[in-house]
Length: 271
Image (cartoon, rainbow, N blue to C red; front, side, top):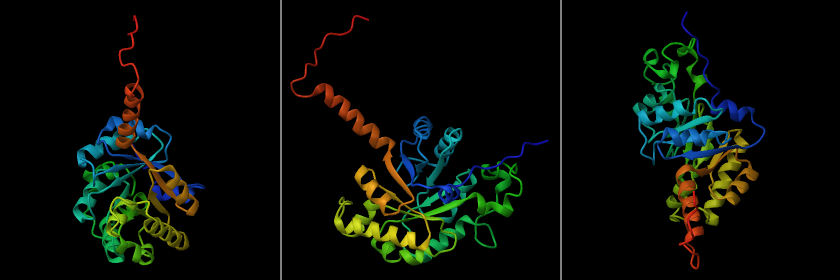
């Protein structure tokens, strides 16, 4: 008898069950080793980034494999909201998708259609050949595929903030994720994600999401920012990225031992 497989809970399921904000980390190194280290940190979710990192289908698949032994929800950010790209990432077994640069309810509706099979959507049917259904080892996959996928759309422009209420009302959008960096750029404040106007836009979007009963996430690599957004009602927060942690911690370690006045010629150990 062939093995029958049950898929893990989606990020939507975990958010519904949570009694606190879920803490996440960015995995941008495109390495299954790094992704596994991040997944074992005790965080709740890990983002695999195919928008701003050198990730493709094969590298994302390898990272999903590496993380599968850990109780985290992998969230895969696709490069853009393209129907074909979404189909490919879904078929390789990405259950939780984050789609960037969704500026309107109409765009959100198109993305929803891309993640659903007909008649509710336009996702191509290839589950018998795909890891998403574990090659037809998930009973009844086609009939309940929507239950196995969660969709988060990214609000990261002034236009998206202005249309947030309509985006939040789109059936099939399970959560929104706010990107302060691109939001700041769209507001003419490039590199100023802590500008009061940007922070205010983030807080207004979280407030609207809470009122609509839709989980809102946010990128907040500064601890004080994360605290502020959690207090405002954010349901999931990204608090750091593997490559940023590696860059800053290696810089700090080298600075510690090469500081002005330090003796770089300390005697070596005898063993």
